[in-house]
Structure formats: structure tokens, C-alpha cells
Length: 377
Image (cartoon, rainbow, N blue to C red; front, top):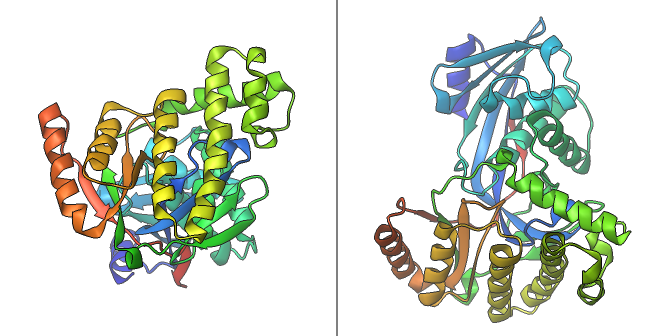
């Protein structure tokens, strides 16, 4: 906190009024179903984005990033409009826009969630700013209201049609638990996720195949799910069982059917995973992670060679389960593995990537951490 406050003072000539932070996330299971009213099971990681914020007496907005050295982007409250501003600043501008900030501000961002790794660096940024704005401007918004606001900022201002999961867990997470989140009404239940006593770790594998969700692949798949809902005449894919969906296959074109099939089966896998965790059945949890990856790879087609190689290698090294996480087309995978096998697994994946001519991967682990919070005000 002292570091970002000092840097803020150097850039803007005064101290910030508030400092807040929000974490990235790993989704244990439940991928690409938050926009279909599904259940998801993410947890917050220890890596966070921290923001320092202060009001101005005029309507000028000035935004800087620790990761972008001395570069300061400047605009005005009067010029806020969807898709406007430098691309790196749009996530911040979108939150200011959707929360109705009507005076100038100065904002410094310190993003420590790896970019492009499928760990939701964008939601960490949005939620840290929303948390700061909510307190500084006395908005009085609930965590669910902040989640919907930050989702709207990313959907409407940035132009990424993301679901509600990433923002919700970044705001609502509790240390030591995964968050069973109902994406229809944002009710949630903390599910203990205690793997260390079982001699297990969740290895996070950043393939460094960086994805970009604004290139249309994400939007295309969401549109397929929406088309399935429209063609079947239902409220959402949440409201049809796997058996019912399969029985109506003839009503859908092949691409729409198979993408919707991922959604309805993934929703069931999430609820099965909760039961596995409640019963400390980590073998079953691993099986569900494997099923999820196969569905994302073969039905939803959002994986990539680097992710598949990471998953296959982890399984060959004895992982109970492994899958890609995040939006896909790159980013990270996870592997549920015995703690004393982690280093061996990392070495095998690194070698496999080198042999395939891929960029060297990065590895880290994280215990389930707490959600967004104000550090000082």
C-alpha cells in the first residue's frame, strides 16, 4: 500500500484518498456457463490488482498504471462513451462510466494478476476500482450490485460479452473456500476447498499463449448458447436437463447443439463437484475436471495446443484431474496433483513445451483467498 501511495504522490503531486484491491480468480469448474444462468465454482487467488484514487475539483480524468511507467491517459467525464479511450484504460473508464462518477478523478493502477493467463486480470481491475469508488463516493451498492455494474462496464464499455462469474468471485470470495455461485440471482455458498490436508496442491499452469477475448471467439460461442435457448423456446440452458436437451437435438443445427451440450453438461458437473468436495472425494473431483476439459476442447472448441499439452502432460505425471480454465484460446490450465509430484510435473510440462517449440510456461499455486477490500481511506 505504501508503494502505490508513494507512486501516486510522485505522479499526481498529492496523496490518494483511498486505496483498494481485488483478486484474480481460478475457476475450479464451470466454464462458459455463467452467461447461461449456470452454477460456477471459482475461488479467488492471492494475486491482486491494487488501485489508488482521488477526486479532482474539475471534470478531468487522469489514469496511470505502475506497469506502464510514466504514461498518463487523460480524458474528461464529459467524453466518457462506450469503446472510447486507450484500450488499456477502457476497463477503468467503463467502471467510472457505469457507476456514474460525475467529477474528475486521478487513478493509479498496480496490476499483479498475470495478463492473458485466464486468471481474470480484467475483473480484478474493475472490482478494485468499483470498491474504491463505492466507498469514496458513498454509493452504498451491495456486492451483487457492484458485480452487475462491473459486468456491464466490460460488456457495454469495453465490448467483451463476459458473464457475471469473474466479477462476483473477485468481490465475494472468502479465504479457504471456493464460491458456489448461482449466476442467475448471484446467491452463493462457500464450499470448503481444503486440499493441503489431503497432500494435494492445485497447480496453475500459465501456458503464456496469451488470449484476447475481444477477437470474436468468445462472443460467437455465447451467441450459440443464446441461439440454442431461442430455438428451443426456453428461458435459459439452466432450465433443461442433459437428457431433455439431447432428446431435442434435431431442433438445433449441429454447431449450436454441441456448444449448448457443453453448457448443460458443465452445469451438472459443477453440482457434482460440490458433492465431491463435501465428501472429500478428490478422485471424483479429478474425474470431473477431466470431463470438463474434454468438453471444452471437443464440444466448445475453446482450447488450444498449449493448453492440451499442459493437461495431457499433467495427467501423465499422475494428476488426479486437469483442465483448461478461463475464456480459452490460450491462458492457463489447472492440475489437481499430489504435492510431492508438483516439481516433477512442472519439469515434465516445461520439457514438453520446449520439445513442441512453445514458449516456456509459468507455474504457481494459490490458496483460496479473500475478495475485494479497501486497504486505506
